[in-house]
Image 1 (cartoon, rainbow, N blue to C red):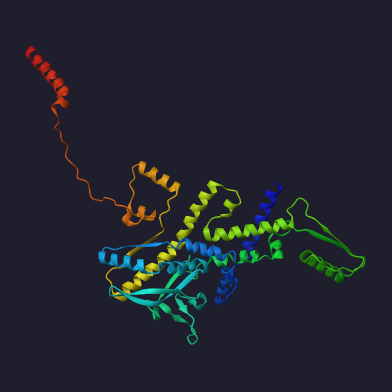
Image 2: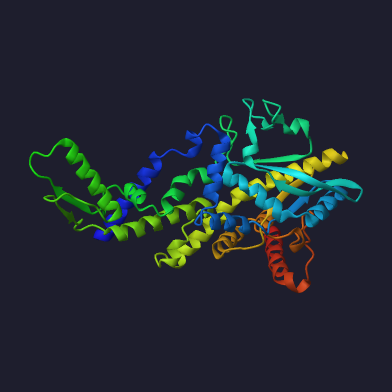
Amino acid sequence: MKTEKSSVVLSTNINKALTALPNPSRVLRNKSATMEIFHQVAAHPDVFPQIQSYKSALGGLNVLPQASNNSICKFFSDYFRRFPLRELVRSSVSARDYGFAVMEITEYSQMDGKTVPSRIELCSPELFFFDPERRLRMRHKTVKEGVDIFATYPGKFLLCQNEATLTNPYGVGLLDIAYWIAVGLNGNFEFMMQFAEDDGRDKWIATYPPGASQEEIDSLLATLISLRNNGVAAFAEGISVEPKAMIGRTSSNDLYRNIDEMLRRKIEKLWTGTDLTMQVAGKGGYASSESGLTIREDALEDGKTLVLSAINQIANIICYLNNLPEVPELTVQLPRALSKTIAETDKLYYDMGLKPTKNLFLKRGYAEDDFFIDTTPKEVKSADFAADTDEIEPLMDVFESYATRLKKKSLKM
């Protein structure tokens, strides 16, 4: 019970510290300096694998175009099959890390007589900023107010924003939120001890001779701090020093390890939406594994939204460059991966009489060629009262018997 209680206290202290510490975007006025901080966080050995794992999970996205004009639908289907979609996915999902992502079309090619983008590259975010009217501008050496890239270079750039608002067009970047967690994961023991406040920290007590001046006392306290942090210190003769262990609490080494694990879990939750460490630590089993996978699928929806925004912009650019009569409606889907829970839920609804729709199958990861839904109205046949004689003979016998009784009754009258 002491260990569990200590973990609760530790977690509370860490959360309190992370809440109090401001994100770099709220402190740094210079956006270039802010993005440089984000680059450093992205390169952290505990953060980088999470970013790459999330991008790889979306690498198998497929694009499904729909249009009333069959030729346009076929054209865009063929185009996105040839297009390097994986690079576009990884670039557009970067908006989740930095808050926004700017991509430039660097190459065009011809396909079926139409001009189409054939290569798209991610731009450095520090080169761009938003003006007071929330228009994206590129920094320029001679143009102080920057260049309005969409007005100056139409059909050249793409912009993806993660949870942008009217007051914050830069969006919300996970690297901004993860900054102090990454600082803690750098392995600074003293920093982690400050996270945990006094929980688990051994105390050092020293006695000074009577008549010592305040300057001597301050010097002694500074030496004690050095002893606690470095393990070595020098004292004048006549000063006694002894450690006082934190009895009943977690040791400093265990505390350091627990903090490191908690911070790693927070990084995992930020990017994947789940704490996969639970499965490794043996604290969950099948139930936690299933819920973790479900949450992860929900987290991928944010990335799918960013990718969908990018491909819709590409479709609009293609229609703009070639003066096409219709912009197709595009959707993206991951390869089919139905869980047992989803399948059982669908079966429950089907048993209630509800029928699946085309959108449901697409959402479940099926391609349009994988299923067929008959939407033709069924012919309603009129009732046919013709029947075999053998089937209605008992009924006719009853009728004849009833008719005979009526005839006899009328004769008596």
